[in-house]
Image 1 (cartoon, one colour):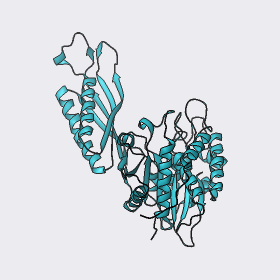
Image 2 (cartoon, helix red, strand yellow):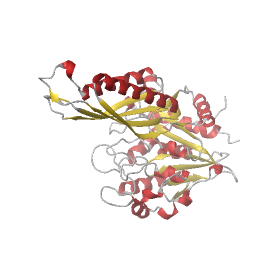
Image 3 (spheres, one colour):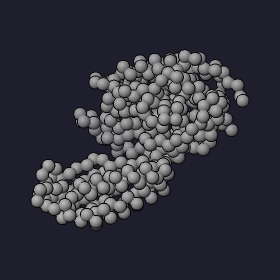
Image 4 (cartoon, one colour):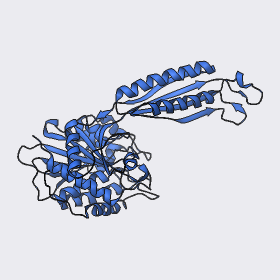
Length: 412
C-alpha cells in the first residue's frame, strides 16, 4: 500500500475549533443564522479568507460573491474544485455547509509543502439555502452558466434587490455571465458535507461515499367529498376527504418502505371545514418523493397516482393531482467515486456507499463538471437544527481521507 505522510493527530480538534469560531458570526437566537450578503456573511468571509491565506492560497471573490482560494498547479494543469456553502437556514447548525469549506482549507494547509499534479480551488459559496432571496444555489449555477439573471431583480422580505446586495458585498451583477467556468479546465468538483441523516451512525462508520444526489418531485393532491354533520351521518354514507387523505398517506409510506432507494412523505395537510363536529369535505396535501434513480421515483409517482385515484373512487371523492416540482437525480462521477474509495481504504475505513437525500451545491455543479461527495457522520442524523453535531474524531477521519484523496488523485 502507498505510504503517505500522516496528518497531525490534532487536525480534527483544530477543525472543530475553527468551526466554533466561525459560528459566532450569526444573527441572534438559537443555533447559527447566517444569510448571504449580510454583516455576518462579511465577517465569516474575512475569517475564511484568513484561513485561505494561512494555507498559502490566492484569494479572490467572483461575480456571484463566491469566495475562492486557489493553490496553483504545474503549468497547463487542470483544476480540482472543492467547496460548499457558508450560509445557513434560520437557526441552523454549526456544520452544515461550512464544514466543507473549513476542512479542505485546513488539509491544504497541512499539505502546503507537498506538490500536487493539478491546481486546487476551495469555493465558499454565498447562497445555497435560499433563505434570504427566493433563489438558491446561486454560486454554482453562475459557475456552470445555468443561473437565470432575472433572479438578480428578486427582493428579500425588506425589499432589498439581490443585485444591489451583491454589488454592495463586492460581487459584480454585470459580470455574472463572464464568471462561467470552462469545463475543459477542470478535473471535477468534490464536496465534503455532514450526512444530515442517520445511516452512517447506524452502521458505525465515520465517513461514506455518495453515489448520487436524489431526484425530487412534489405533487399537490386535492380530495373533495361532502362536509356533513359528524353525529347524524352514518359511517357507510360518508364522503370523508380526510379519511381518504389518511389512507393515501399510509399507502405512500408503505410503497416507499417496500421500494429500495425511495423515500417519500405526505405533508402540508389542509382540511375543511376543520371543526370537531363536521365531516371533512375537502383535504389538500402534498406528496414528495425522492430517489437516487429517476426511474424509481417516476415509477413510484405513477403507482401512487393510481392509488390516489382508486382510493378516491372507492370513497366517492373527487380528486385532482398537480405536479408542482421536479428535479432530476445527479449521479456522482465513477472516476472520482473510485478515487474516494481508494482513499478511504488507504486511510483504513470501509468505503460504504449511500445516496444523498438532500440537495447540495454539487447538484448544480454537475452541469459544469464531474462531481463527487464524501459524507461525515453526524450525531443522531440531525441537521438544520441548533443541536447538529459531529465529533473531533470523525473530523479527523474526514481530514485523513481528504488528504489521501488529494495525494492519490491521478489527473492522467
